[in-house]
Image 1 (cartoon, one colour):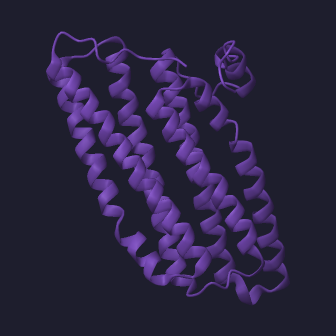
Image 2 (cartoon, rainbow, N blue to C red; image 1 turned 60 degrees about the vertical axis):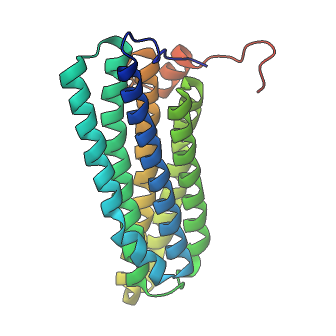
Length: 244
């Protein structure tokens, strides 16, 4: 696993500042994870109260984004970091932007769970649950890769986006078929479609976080790079004696 040496500065205070920023990002990630989990539960179980709580709690995520962004700006101004330290600050700014957007998607899940008004998601509950579980796991593992600065793990997590896209496409086709068969359900079906889209977008943002991990550790921007090229260039085989 690749490592950055973020504890080798002349100023111990600088070490503390970087570690505090990193820890706040992980706290923000934990909060966003919980928002996504609660939003999905509210949607699948028709829990309007929980959905309302999720939709009204987005301000906490937004506040953390503003706080962390301000701290990053202060570090850039006062410390003028270079090399890996600068990459860390740039990565943090990018990660918290994606986390805030994931929080927005979770807010949609909560809001639509209230508007749908019950657990009757019809034939779509199984597909929504499967898509939701895929996305929740992706987000959790993307944040874990960030916490450990693990390039291998980040690339493996990003590769799951194909599974998410396939599941989303299948659900979208199912919803389209039902819309043709029963146009009276148009409002409900569109809301479920928007929920599925929100889940798919959470997967996309999780991929972004994984790409930032590669940038942080390797110093390479791999956006718009083919996945095969990424694997060939960065995916490392386990060392002898390593656990798989």
